[in-house]
Image (cartoon, rainbow, N blue to C red; front, side, top):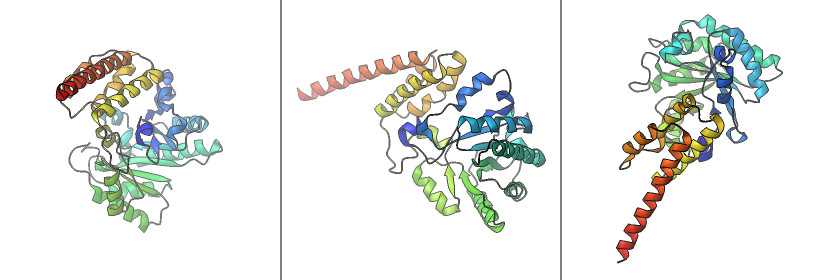
Length: 308
């Protein structure tokens, strides 16, 4: 949907667990790696703790035609970190190194040269930028995305962009070739450009900010109307149904996007609550279409009265 509204320079999939991708649950994860030509260039994002699985999955990702591979070493979710994955890898640099090397080997043995990147944080429980990032820069990654918080901070408080600036300076000091991408608390194209210049990063990643503004990649700063957002939600629901079907466990994932479209207008909370009670995408589409008809009729009534 983001590519349909206003496409960023590079897109990334949701992260997929390499252990899960090599298990009986593989088929459920495959849909995460579906993409359309319109989404290119697109990076496959993976996480896990088993170097051999990273090697195997890297080969599959190359065969699928992705434009790059990103290893998530920054997720602060406890269910991920308890496995030793995500931001927990900050505390196990040798395992992180093995994972990066195994992934690179899988890419190279597939006869490919697609870029390999890592997304991480400034630390796990405390800021360890000088140690952790210096270590990563020594592994000749094509790109490094830094979220300016520790895993302990999660998404609370203010993102420490000054620490991201220090990472840029460290990269320059070491004469490393790695592209540095900043991440955290970015909600618009304009803000991304401002931060890029202010902190010297090579690029800016927008993640959660997109959930507050699906049009955040539009350089014009255009704000979408309520009707435009509802129409986009209907399109999103139909696309979701086509891609994932109507299974209950899949539809739960779709519901987290309702707030992105239905917000900041009279009755939005009630409409969201109604949509959250639906069991299928088709049911939600029906509610939105009926509401659109009702609103159109009401508007016509107001218009006619104003003419009298």
